[in-house]
Image 1 (tube, helix red, strand yellow):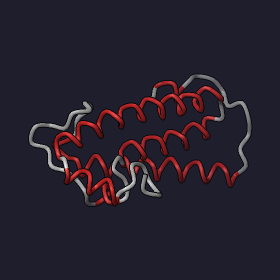
Image 2: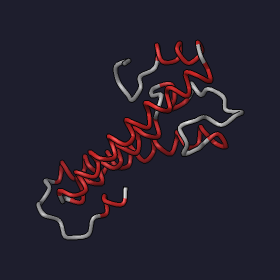
Image 3: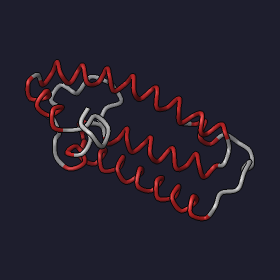
Length: 134
């Protein structure tokens, strides 16, 4: 995440429409991540294992994505990287995507173990990220 703030001046100009889209992407991603954090409340953890008393969340932002916080982080980071107008932040988004992909794999294995059939039903109807079911 720190590489998104790579020091240095912008290396290219952005058309106003692209700049507006990047701001929308940044703000929309931030809102999605924040809504996931709010829904998690005291269940929130940076670990891949759910807390002992965790409940399976399937409402709110978790209706459209099994990982709205990660989708929001990636979306906001992408918008921010475009606004930075440098190569390094764009590369950082790619690295962040890989790290989160690996974290999601581990997290989903732990959720399958903890919630079993209930989690399998949830995965059957809710996209891992956003969009088509996967």
